[in-house]
Length: 334
Image (cartoon, rainbow, N blue to C red):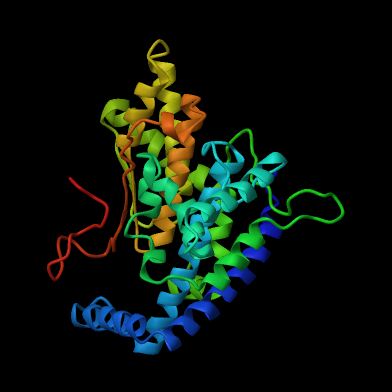
């Protein structure tokens, strides 16, 4: 089971280690440093940042480190709950042995690769499935810079740590209910610097319910269930989106109890929309909606999931329309 408090404390330390590793890479790798500087110049020229380069670079490094960590969290959650059928990072019981054996098999087949290649292979399985592809697409900051092979080894060891008192994994993501609310706290507190930069603060559950009671429910009564749409313009890790998903799905099942739940889930996913300026916030919100849809449909494996279109975009809700040749919202195709 997930010990959210212990997990958060450990992941905060891991993010700091990754940040130091990435900064070291930028010092050693002139090409990587120049690529990042070009991104800064483009962002500055396009009025997408007014920050000094060093401050902007620090934010980018934090985002990249968080991207690596969150991709591992997504993968471990899927592995431990067998949404991904093969364990590559870790897993409770025999799943940990399986992960180690798969790593050995990987290097027998790819002797020139390093642990960073294996870590990427484990993470990017999510790209093989329509339901999770957006979690590791080009919008994920981890694509901007690789961690070092030595750091990848430390990351793998981190996920495979055993509690000497119990003989079990330190972090176990197994949850029969597939609850993802712990990801909200993780998002808020993963990096103190990111929390300050993006003013991260999650909405308590009782506040979320209070607001939905007085907004979504009256809108359903006034406009009808089929015509209601909701959007959270600063959705963060998706608490309001998940609350709306649950309410709308319950209403549809009450209204049409004989209809396949998958039809209802498709409808609800078209009704719930979110936007956030923070890429890994949007990734978490997408992931949580996907998991909620899987749980509602009783789908046990990602390979069985439909090609749902989850309407969570990366963008600035204070801007309207395209800016400087950019699409108005990344991740939106219509």
